[in-house]
Amino acid sequence: MKKRIQIEEVEPKSYEGMFALENYIKNCGIAGKMVHLIKMRASQINGCAFCIDMHSKEALKDGETARRLFLLNAWQETTLFTPEERIVLKITEEVTLIHKGGLSTETYNEAVATLGENYLAQVIMTVVAINGWNRIAVSTHKPIN
Image (cartoon, rainbow, N blue to C red; front, side, top):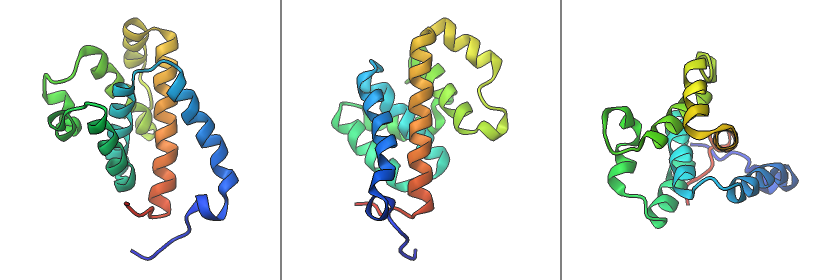
């Protein structure tokens, strides 16, 4: 791959909003384990090697199992994920694949019933953040460290 610009180098101020959103996610109360699942699943869908690499390392460091990470792209076919994790993964997929209809009414209603409005808002913002990061990394061919 041919080297492309790295936005943090040529326009460092442009990351301020992204970092503010990450700070919100870090402090809003959503569990770190759930954040890792969201970031990994969205990154898998978006084909973002940089983010998959980074978030898999972080997830393992924070106690996630390799088995669950290996099976994350087939989460619907396993019993390894809790009902709460399953609805969060469903939200992650539907919001990430917004061009296919976005967050369905069925998923939204199940999410409100399972998670409550505040937690649902936190999940949606986490999905929005990782999708932004994925788009930055994929469009600039961000190299894996």
